[in-house]
Image (cartoon, rainbow, N blue to C red; front, side, top):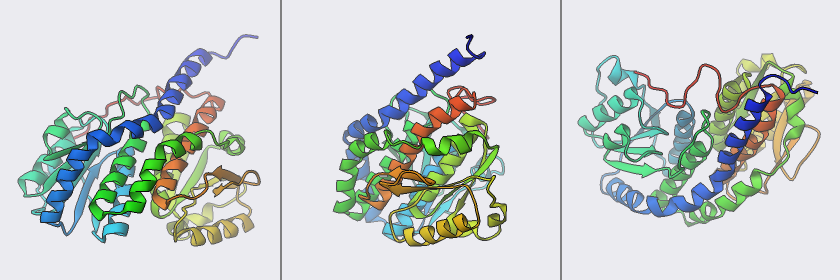
Length: 352
């Protein structure tokens, strides 16, 4: 029987994106050496002049990494984190008052004009500028005081995967160094092996429901909120599925009215203090008859997707996105989508 039109291209694409997903553990394994000096320098400068606020600046997948930074810095350092709107500099020509504060830009390519202009404006206002980038020679890197390289290597698939995991790992390493948290540092050392294992978990139970829908919700809280947001974006990019992300608390403030048996929900369950509240929410949603899929350690079936046994809440969250990425390949194939070349998108998006 003849294959459907375009199936060869989808197969080629799957192999490429799948390969990049599988590369993530190795990226983390080689990342540490290149980050040691710049993280030490950044932490030393932050300790000499502690910021009262951290301002992040990012777009797309990198913006979800910035949400992870917000959780880490506020949870472990007690420093408020604010998200800058890049067009304040690039469109409106306004500088923010950031003297003595930390400005942290996150970008895979480091080539989006609005991020570069915002980084330059922040430094000119007296901020300490740091950039997490995959290309340490990029214009954004040159616009920053300190560069923290993702070390992910080339990423050819349009939809970012290993660079998101790499950015989260950079943020984890920075947090561990800034706080002196030995337990977190030890969990980071175990993360490459755990990522490899997470990528083998079977989330196919969710594939049937997600392949048949046109819209769904992803839910997270604490360290898993950025995971839910990234999952939502990837469902749009690679599967042409409308997906919207909410925190577990925010979902009850109106969006819960969407709940029905025909509207799937994908919940990324944290393993920290937020877990109890998310478990209560899951029980309530199942009582309402929703098609709910939750991540649970060791679980499988009945709407429960397997997750690794808890190790550290923040690194556990990173493992969840690796499991999701692995599931995404099969879901895109079911929907006939070309995951490596999403329609209307290109690898480097330059905005101003």
